[in-house]
Image (cartoon, rainbow, N blue to C red):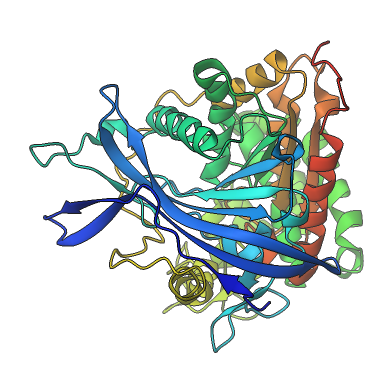
Length: 496
């Protein structure tokens, strides 16, 4: 991609100096640049706007400055027909960087085809971006990216307004009202996409936007979803681990040959059926399970997981995730495997132990993302500031109480007949496993009356499945298809 022109526009220019930080925090400003990109063989001219927009309190005083990047396709005359995708990452405390420069945006990282970092670091065109079919805004919650709270007259910040499940949802809904109004996007079809904890965020926002802002959505996309407040403790949680164990073991050639020779899409349904129909019922018996049955279950779990029957029995059939990441390759190779993406291997100080020394996949990702986003925002998008870009910002302690976001999403769907949901998961994600994502989808609507509006897509990658070149294309095409299929026809009413 070559930038064909750029225009720097400072609008509504207002800077607030936070003397304690000894750096200027831009409160209400924007920088606009012009670009082009080839997507699926078509040249797309677009505008990138980076800026900050205030969050107001009840007295219409600014209490935070939120940083965003907003991409719009040029030459679109009627934005009322142009979808708007509102993108969040997770953490909590993570900037909106991961999906921005590695998944849906017009520019992506320079990495190898499997997602591993290469030097020199940098950015390149994304030929699969959804910018051809939708405009996109990447939002950074407070204390992520360049977003910051604004202290009151006494120099204090009320952390309860920002750092918790409900607070996060409520203030972001208010901010989105301001953004949509400023950008004149009230008539546009709207979509929320969130990754990891961002799925908790957007699940809650779906209902909050409807009930508090009277803003109705066409779709919600959950990328590598959390539990979104849905219960799956006890035997269900233990049984649900096995399909992921099998996927990770398959990737590392750690399964028996008769399983290893199968394609992943042939293997996983077999393991899922065992987990649901055979493993779960016997786990319910706990310590009262017959010894012979316990031995039989341990043998079968070892067969599917790539770890020994002895280890499984030592853990009473409940092998912790962290132990699995340490154990899978311990005997043969002496490496640990990654949490968020178990394709990555880690090198620990000792082969002994019950958990890896570090997250090998996250360390690898920070190699690529940190230099790239700092360069991209300053040099290509021309947003200049001395603020530190928080890849992971100070948001803890985080109030996790009252997490009913799954139920919130169900209720939003029930109230809005036009609202569909798609889930995207990587098979090698050990933090928010693909099978737990399926389970959440199955449990989201107990009535079963909305199951035709829920869909699941799986990928041969991890938590950030789009880092793998093949899945970057596939996942964006799945998004593109989801958006196009959820746009209502002309004059079509939203009713049951």
